Image (cartoon, rainbow over all chains, first blue to last red; front, side, top):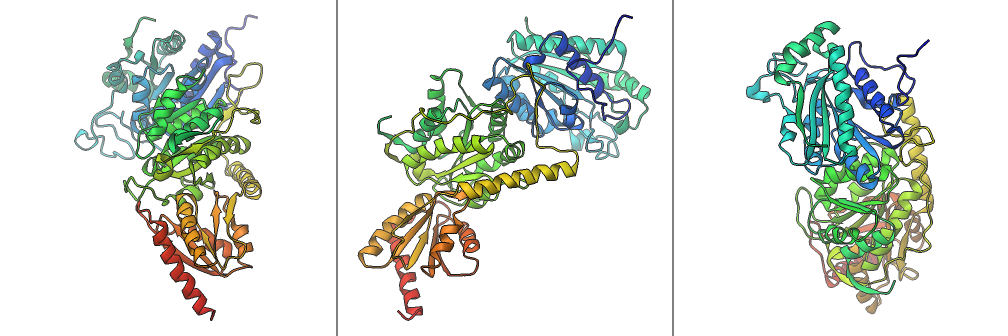
Length: 246
Length: 358
């Protein structure tokens, strides 16, 4: 019998703890597949953010360092500068990256740090129980915006990828989603491209991944995937935001 | 290496490089700017080294975490308000058991404080400083030579115990120039770093983290750290005494304050006032034993600090109710002269003698 699918070698044989319908497990698997396919396993080091994926060292079978909340891009900078031959990626949520980690991410990007950032955007703080994130949509109800996000008091959804596109140090920025088989395939390609930009040393690369959070969105799994298509992508359109020649 | 005239901040830099420090991450703040400036020039000459001026002290300490996690010798430096910002990262370094050297050229606080020499970060340095159950080794140099020696020692201690080490200097030490012999590269013991992340080549992958999902695991981890700190307390206490043998009063002072105290004691001795000095060279672990031993010989301890009184708590803990503790402090960046201190000590000395009917 022909084997057509198996667990990527760069994932530990451990069941994910994520909620049903959560996008993290898909994204973990895609990153691990790409690491295997590009044969990067032996030189990859992950700087892990804090959020739902804080224990991703139980899943990613690569060398890994935990980072304080928001600081993964700075930790990754230290790793890369001290060990330039490594392939370094961070894995961060939208609260981690776009709120508390704004300075670290922005300056790593501006320095053209040769790291790849996987930015999981689910428009909410997942691990702490569904509070408003900088990426939450206008009107989005969360546990800290029970009446819906109001731009007059809480500002606007932060389009971090578009912000980074202004910086000369960034070489590749793409927004993808993992809410349908077709989008999952595109996401995998973008992840590979992110690593390619790092390997070719063209600059800082980041893939923003829109990911469903049915638990904190108070939606069903299918409804969550639809919400990404119908609502979230209106604010955060999918596609390449910036791509330098690589 | 031959003796050369160097500023304290440059001596720290050169000693670090000779100790094998290849990476420096920092952010400008007075009065330690000569150190990152020195490192930016010198590390550019070293093979496989890197200097990076970070976006903030927070960024810098996290870059230190990253470089340390791959097994490199790495240093950062700052001054009091900047060290406050680094405390989150220092707590992580302790929890992740990663070595690093942190230089604090202390200035007056709280808040932005003054840029002048002070010792008011004693509590922050010796009590952990960040969140959680941890300690950092704290070295307290009192000369440019000791800045160099203790910077080199800091790297060895950090690697031996896999823990962050703070060198607590101040603006006077950082800025002044003295002849110094930088400790040589040769003969340094190599520490194998089996925790270092190098990519999972021919071995299972490794993860470095302070987080434990299960509180029982976290408790085990914390007790493991505590056992390590106990070993450090047993092995790494360092201090110096001066004219203590016949003393009837012992001054306890460290760093720049201890230099001033020496000047004061020399004057006191000229008038036959029997005053000696205990100078802690490690603030944590604190040299409590010598203070307890000295309490068998004399009754009066005089704590002098360039703060409103912080180390005095450790002297009290060491004495545990015995002896009498006198105190003089100048917080905020004011540095008293040896004459000023001499006058204060002699007054306390005579008062004590009278009280005891001598």
